[in-house]
Image 1: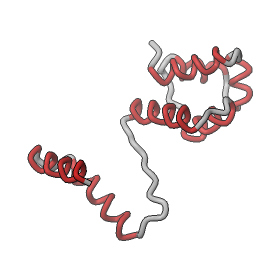
Image 2: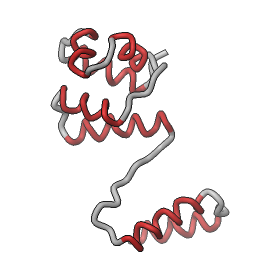
Image 3: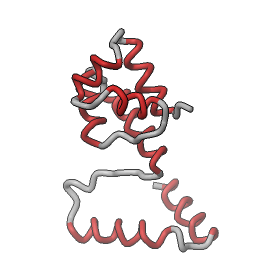
Image 4: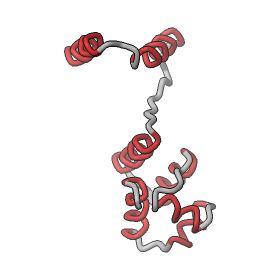
Amino acid sequence: MATKLGQAFRDLRLTKGVTMGKMAEALNVTPPFLSAIEHGKKKPSDELIEKVIQYFELNEEKAHSIKDLVAKEIGEKKISLDGLLETDKDDILAFARKYTGLGEDAKNMIRKMLDEN
């Protein structure tokens, strides 16, 4: 069964009129591997996602959408910490590690505080 990411890959390929073989060759993967991604049996690497974005010349919005689909499927979100002070990076990582252990009241206070800013 295709996942949302697999369907997005397939839709991109078909919209551009590209065969699976041609796309696989351009991305330096095998057609069976690409088929497995389209059917939700394999997950693409970050490198492959970047190749897809370049190959199809996706705009920033579409590229972000594809990256979000990947993150949702693997249960992971990525944010850039580039340009932040090391102390800020340490604080952010410490917060992320402890967040799941917080009670619902504490989480609601944090959400309220973030909404105010």
